[in-house]
Image 1: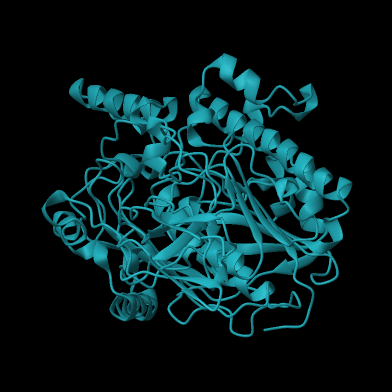
Image 2: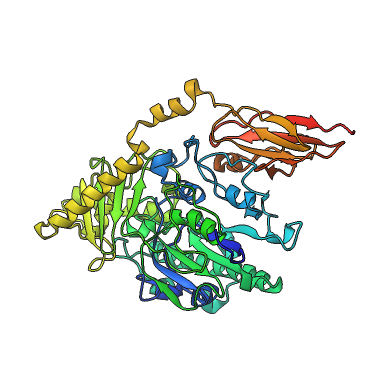
Amino acid sequence: MTDLPRPNIVWLTTHDIGPDLNCYAGIWPGAEYANTPNLDQLAAAGARYDNAFATTPVCAPSRSAILTGMYPTAIGTMHMRSRAVPPAEVVCFPEYLRAAGYYCTNNAFSDFQFQVPVTVWDDHGPQAHWRNRPDPTQPFFAAFHGMVTHESQVVANDEQYQHNTKRLSPDQRHDPAAAPLPPYYPDTPVFRQAWARYSDNITALDYMVGDLLRQLEEDGLANTTLVVFWSDHGRGMPRAKRWPYDSGLRVPLIMRWPGRIAPHTQRTELASLMDLAATMLEVAGLPVPAHMHAQPLIDAHGQSAAQPRDLIFGHRDRMDEQEDTIRTVRDSRFRYIRNYHPDRSGMQHHEYADRMATWQEFRRLYFEEATQRGRGEVPNLLTQVQRRVLASSKPAEELYDLHADPYEIENIADDPRYAADVERLRNALQQWQQEYGDLGLIPEAELIERWRPGGLPQITEPPVLQIVEGRLSATCATTGASIGWTTDPPELPIALSPFSRITGDPETDGRSWNLYSAPIPAPAGTTIWFRAHRLGYQASIDAAITIEAS
């Protein structure tokens, strides 16, 4: 605990971008192409993390790690698009902030691999904002999510693209001819346009960031608020998103905290996005639960953690209908990858992604090279590096020297000069799996049967209510359950959209739910409803109590 004033916290988050911001020029290949004045200014006013990584190169498993502070492979959230039942001790960290008096809002994206309980947020939806808190002196944690950089928007139709980027001036639009394509992409108009539009979308996001930073200034909150910017994983492009290389795992991470983090701070230590959960608790003066795998990146004074990580672990598991299992570990120089299914292509058919122009372009060129072979010609439309993206198999082990080979195109796992590094990182990966467990190595059908025996969800027990000395207490027999309470009477539930059901948005009936953390006053003449939630379980039925007038 700390006696320092508790900061407000704002998260500015986005989808599917690497460190492709101009402030990363010289740190990340191609970052100089970007036009990101607001994010560059944010970085200049605080700390830029040069080696920050997601746990996995796809959104929902990565976000599950961030919200819980736990490795997805350890809590069962590693498969993209699943409904996991994490262990009982796992809690969404905003509940700790709410219990300590924070007003917590989410505008408006979920996608954490489980249904989000109503106990996590004071407000969730496109209206959620710190400005809606009933007490203007209450500290807040407000998360905002930019969708304009999602991979789907890179290949959106022209009308949608123009709408997304309507605020960009002509000189802010990126020239496809100057796009800094990595060597694993074919140099074609399709890829050049995709890279330019990807960069235009980041500039559109930069406008959103500027809007929210100005709102903090308008409200007189900029100097008392920790602002954190991050992306859920790397670029939404082939051989990046869904691939556990730096292109898919390395992310921008920026923190501004006036008076605690000095301007122009450059942090070079290895950082995991998962650690944001522990970091937010630390800066709020709250203990980090012993079960959390996350560790604080900074302390309540804004200083770097005493023991930064020397290894970062990551994984790739089922991606929708793509079945694969990959584990990876990275230190400050090398990335080691263990492919459990070397007989499977890294670019298996993916119904969603295969609709995108970049995926189609890769497959078109690969097919045309097959046609060249059929004519007895030497294939010449792709390089050997590019062909490996679509190859039908992959090595069992990979090792890349990130200092000499930032694009990870020369696998040196079989080079005798690096045998000691392979052995060291292989052993580190195995030790990590043994220490935390790896549910990705268990058949998914077996996990599902454990979680939902016979295909039926487990149900949280209803709260048990008692009045003791004029205060109302609530308990739940289901281990790990959180309890919410409200004085709003029941209403008809509001149907979630198909997308919201997939992403696990909180169910709502229009009522506002408080988090129960200690006995509450029991005013006479009042009816109070309680509901219990355990992650991955069906919520309990409501338990209601009416306090009779004396």
